[in-house]
Amino acid sequence: MGKTARVPRLTALLATAAAGAIALSGALPSTAAPAPEQAAPQTGSAVPGDLAQAFKTASTTYDVPREVLVGIGYAESHLDGHDGQPSQDNGYGLMHLVSNPQNPTMSEAAKLTGLPVEKLAKDSAANITGAAAVLDSYADQAGLTGESRKDVAQWYSVIAQYSHSADAPTGRLYTDEVYRIIGAGVGAVGLAPKAVTPNRGAYAKVAPLGVKSPTSTQAVDFPGAIWSAASTSNYRVGRTQAISTIVIHVTQGSYAGTISWFKNASAQVSAHYVLRSSDGQVTQMVAEKDTAWHVGSQNPYTIGLEHEGFVDQPSWFTDAMYRSSAAVVRNIADRRGIPKDRAHIRGHSELPNQTHTDPGPNWNWTYYMQLVNGGNPNPPTYNFTTYGSGVRVRSAPQLTASIVATLAGPTQVFVTCQKQGDTVNAEGTSNNWWAKLRDQGGYMSNIYIADPNPKLPGVPVC
Image (cartoon, rainbow, N blue to C red):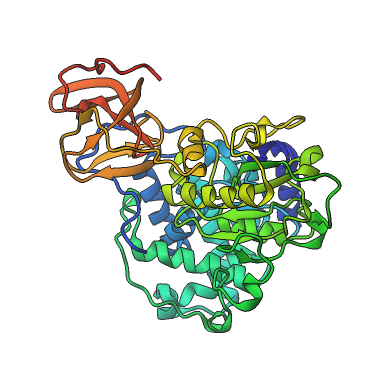
């Protein structure tokens, strides 16, 4: 939803939180070795080595397994602090410390660590420390001691508590995702895959959100969706105008977190559908006949789709999510006679009277609209070949940008454009030009393109 404009300003939020404090298939993105020289980290971010050390230090200080900390961090943010900008439910940093009526982890972290809230919100190492302190306190409350505390499998209920989910199915959805990430590993901070069979405790009897049942499918408009209703405080029953427009949003948060927020009566926001990044799973939360609150004055005639992720981080925009979303939009448009064009399928920022920026510049509209219209957006044409193994593709032409793909060996690629970024040193040469790869959805240094020219011939500048 690109909600940074909707949530309270940081200074007001920090003051409130400070007052409260006083009172699995396949590895996740990994680093290629050897790593080139790193550029200076940005605010709210850190180079992978710094993050790895921060996780290790917090784990040791608060006796919380490193796997638990990394799993939560990757599930919440893909290990990106987003320059201190808030999520849609007022959460900050790569560990998503939150300040809202149902989730007090920010104020708890400030009280437990003595760190100022602004530092917890903007500094990645402090944010990890704060989360570790909160998890430590929850583990103490749960009676997790001795050898059990070192056993990752025993942390299930603690992780679920950290999520402060609106209900048990959403809590299980959140926690299962954290354990999936632990099982897959996160190479960017040196977390190897670890097979864990979690002790779900009371959650073993809870059907996770996403399991289809007669009650979860009877209310949906799109046949492939799971039904999980938003709070009735967050939408209006019925319509005052005919539906004519479908709106594309980005959640500025995780899938489970967004679903939980729409169930929270204080949110005063919702969307008809929420889509998961990893596999395109679809949850419907408001019936299409009712008016979700997602675009202000434009709500009466629109249907809203929220896509898991962050506007500034294209690693969330997976092919699975694009294709699933396009199937939902195509289904809605065909059922309701809505033209499948950009005049009727629009981004949040494109509607009148909006202050939001989603889906932002990283959303591939050309690719998406071809999918909506049933075309083949990626014909197998290539213009260059890479060389080397373990070459990283990043979300931006910076060495600190998140890794969206890793090329195992020489690969045929289609370079759509190129731009200057951080200088990369390899094979005795230096180059600051980066190629934007169509199929991988990110940038790689031109130094790994099999062409002798630092700036690729015949390729436009982005």
